[in-house]
Image (cartoon, rainbow, N blue to C red; front, side, top):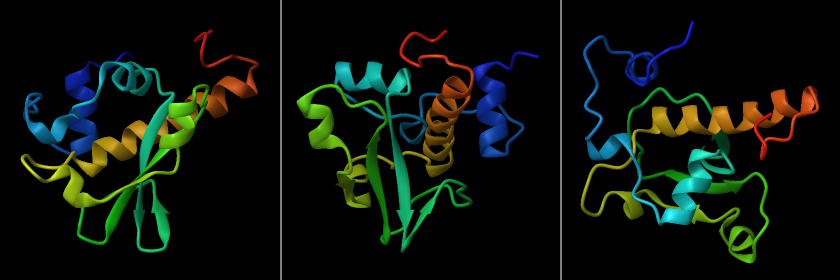
Length: 130
């Protein structure tokens, strides 16, 4: 069964009510090229908590010790290589608005990883989506 974006957000956030899709914590403000690459799962953010990488996040928001790292899955341009591995501390997100919800970021990262694992296992090129 196909899920709607509302159902996906409800499942990720563990809520029954309709999520506020316009809340600052439900998205990222990105340059157009980065936004398109994020949407196609070419890159994502992983949250490093202390000494371990967290793909399963319980808390909704980052703590002062948590740091996101850029993970470019298929870097093809010099700027991709410059961004890959770059640490983004929590204060970078929280200057003006709520930081992104770490559960949504973790979900995006899992989708990007799974797209490569599933795709490569059946000979699919993730760039061509088929």
